[in-house]
Length: 197
Image (cartoon, rainbow, N blue to C red; front, side, top):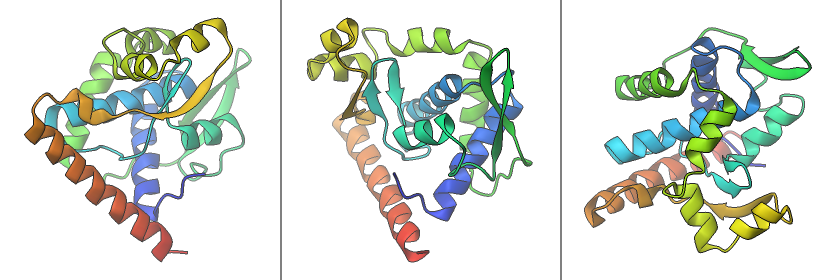
């Protein structure tokens, strides 16, 4: 499982709280898709990561596997931020505490608002269809690594192939800027995660 620094965990948890406060029934799939869209929107518009967590190519779209595991079982990583409840035999999540903006810039909050305005009312299935389009990063990575057929015929559900968000950027300068920003954020996260052990 990924080791998040306390700051990174707080940012992820509060991003989830923000999403939960601005959407209706929030399923695991919808939550993961909205976080992914926020990440890609931040990269495309500003060349910086949002949460700087890796996403992998799975059958039903890009997935952050540590959050997927946490949301699938009893909450551990996010237990201080959200709680699960059931409705119509389906599992949903709601905020457990108030949103704290300490880890966010105004720019990041505006990106969250933009994404929620455009995608927050869509169902998990609608979001899935958007993210699996042939021009998407997920599709390109799956095609490049020859896993599309395995997904279609059911012989594979997940991979460890990582989504490369730098492919959203067309100029070499923009890509280099993003890659540098990502490295800085991940280094800080790793340092802080192990400094608090």
